[in-house]
Length: 377
Length: 167
Image (cartoon, rainbow over all chains, first blue to last red):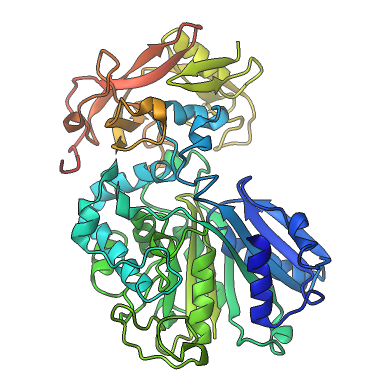
């Protein structure tokens, strides 16, 4: 799958095997190493690295690729993530993960049944609900928005539009923070993003998305056992946000479309607040205002994101924003590939944001770890 | 002895584990301990090797009262651990211990994770789980000399207003 993803990205960019000389990937011991793919692709990298890492690595590795290029280590980097997230190493923690031995910091959590990702972050959101009066049905509006977007994405795994009631009627996983439909998919998939210099990109087949700001895996106080410090509802975006807006030289109102890591509906709510799209505690009203919907002020996860398109450990939100900036989102509009869109966002229709000029990604690793990326047309 | 079976999983706590071994050995004596910095004297909730507040690498285990307040919680309706399926729904609580609450900054505290159980070590009823409820440590003894700390409701009046989700 990794080889397929990289080859298709190279084809998309119009690059042959001599024109990609860098590889970067991230994994949790669950991916194909660069070395076992490069031969199949006929690549001979001048630089490659397989990093350990989870969510929020996508944006971080884009920043590292820029550094590798600027340092003169290579010219063009294929960043990929390949994972059997459904059939093998399930991110939800079932199967092999749940059966493994317990040591180190996990001794303070797993003997108590705290193991899956939705649980690792649940204390943060329960506390946030208590502090700000957030209700479970507030979160459901995020799933509804992303499912509406996915219904206009032929590649989405879950295209079915859902209602707030559907979310509320799905079975509980962890009370009070997540019903089943508040949780993302688990997916076998591979993804690839190609990063090169703006100068080289000028001569490539596609209209490039220009990176104007990137922040990689910034943290809040406390790392793994981040429960120690808080206001626990405050996440890394609180620290990452000001840095990236300052670097990119843009303001919130300049951003046309966002991609926000939606492992769970609550990861979206917390990040939207801490990146400053609304006041802390007002996320529940922001997501119900229509702002995050296609046709709204600033649509979020227009592909359907992790909740509905596929769980790709963060890559698909970056890829979707590149599509948006190109203006050729692969929706159901007949001539979408040529940038002709109807802007009719009803089911089975368009998902291109009109005149999308600047996008932002908010990658989530844990409440304590986050990355961000701002791109312009 | 380095491996212990607990609830169907293997806890690996080697003799040379300077981070966690002492924690579970003390629990075996029904003492809840945390690490205390050898220089600045501050306690830390995560039993790591260095003090987050000063440059010191020196530390010692010190016993705490085992009393605290539920700071946050989660009710596990669905568990991915087969051996815990019969326990569900059960509460995992984040307890802020009475010691060092709000220090060294107003946002810090010693917070540790455990289950909220009743005196028979069965999951506490969901309707009794609330942020603000007062708790005290209890120990689930293992035959090999260690013990797993948990909490039970202490019966004291809550600390401030309580909050719980609508069931």
